[in-house]
Amino acid sequence: MDYELMIKRMQTIIDKIEELGGEIREVILDEPASPEQIVRIETELGVKLPESFKKVLIEFSSYFSLRWFLPDEMERNEEFREIFCGTPNWGLKYLALAEEGRIGWVEQAFPNPEDEYDAVWHNKLAFCEVGNGDYLAFDMSYGDDASIVYLSHDGGEGHGFRLGDNFIEFIDRWSRLGFVGCEDWQWMPFTAGPESGLLPDSEAAQRFRAWLGLNI
Image (tube, rainbow, N blue to C red):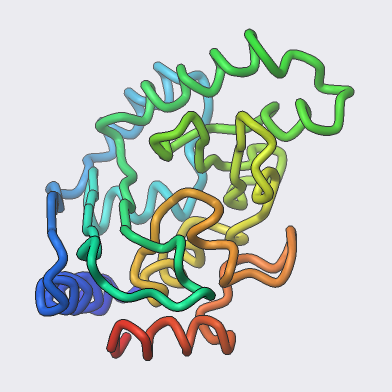
């Protein structure tokens, strides 16, 4: 993965949001994790972290967060009217807390692995709390390098959507979409169905970048 390119894209997003009169509320790029830190969190969680996720943690950053918001008064066309922010975050700092939240939903609301809706919540590892009760999670049944899926707690349209075949693919594609908000209604315009993953080269994605003036 080209981490310098990732940082360049991040800065391009920040510069453009500020140019548009929006707000950057948080930028965090912590130091890379050590192998010892990875082992500790794997022991705590009782699972092996997906390979590409570990690679990013060790080679790039142990915790990444960027929170941007478009200005309220900015005119929006119908296609992108529900996109108002970007809130990417991942890393070791809140991994256990995110997974605790997922387990809580499984125990309280989605306990039946035989139920089609409940099953999506099982055999996962949450790594990003969306902010509305939903999660981005690794599908731990996918092998050593898990795919990324969306977990909705309230019947959201994106429930169970696969967003990438592995973590590196996912964040590379997500960054080219300006790291649009984690809620499913913000990223669904850039998918073609439950198995497509994010599509940064789609016509919708190109229109979105043109709308914001993002050259990424």
